[in-house]
Image 1 (cartoon, rainbow, N blue to C red):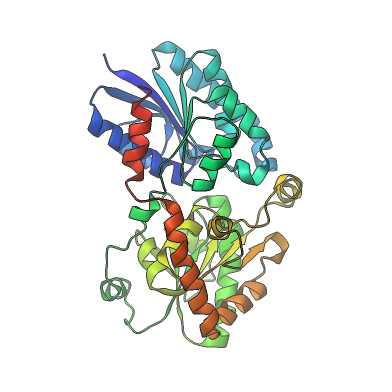
Image 2 (image 1 turned 135 degrees about the horizontal axis):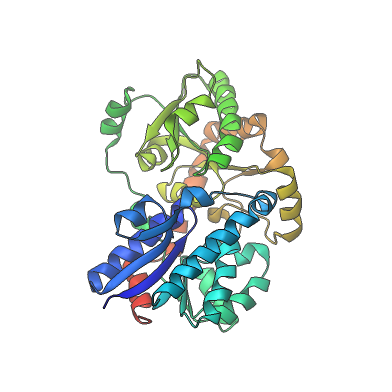
Length: 375
């Protein structure tokens, strides 16, 4: 009889990394059956998904409050599935607002819990560590400072490194990519990465598009490209751009855009790690609803949001948050970086130095080995 494993991911990056972990576990043994919440990547691995991540794509404190009844229904349905048949282990993937509450209920049912990809407790304060210590059997983390933090609090933890070291690599040469998108290889590119959720794209793309117009007016004919996240509809993105916009949209080639651009405009989040690994200088922005931002200001304990800045403990790349995230400020900073060759090269050098803080590779395999110890 196969061992049933619950896996719960609530967003695109969690779906991607959970799928990578599941594939490595499947290489180790065929004696496993996976169910829970995921996206297309997890589904392709054979996970029986009760809900798709698109249904859970809610951002911000206020937005979550408005959907509380739905989240209760999701949790109750998961627990019913757990109780209907045996569940050998739970793998909870980031998504702390939901997963930490689920962990408490799983603990009551004596289900062993692995937490894969740490919540940002280092940003929100360390109170959540006590919950994790109470409910979670093992943490599997991507960043070395997370391992140090959990060890200080006597939580069992394993640092496996960041999978993007091996994932965030272009598969096409610059010439091949330029031929694909129909531009001359000598043209200069600027990449726009507004987010992986509909709410994020709505908030960030119009600002980025206006910034792009200002940059073009000051520096000439750059080619701007939106890097489309999985699950985001191309026509939806087009609807957010002016009808005569020269901004292109690219699907499935985000790492090429990152590597071959002169500079990037990136929404704070997972994409900032991938952007940093590309070595291309970038500017970070983030906007949310006024109520969510009001609450976040009172609980966030760190001065930087971009992981490149957090890892090195200083501001390598500029960040524009909420009211500071205006097209004018973002464009001005981008133009300044592009015009100042010494600053541009310094950013590239410091981004390159950051790579060594993200592990030595084989992150999924190491994570699977850590999970296998509990199966």
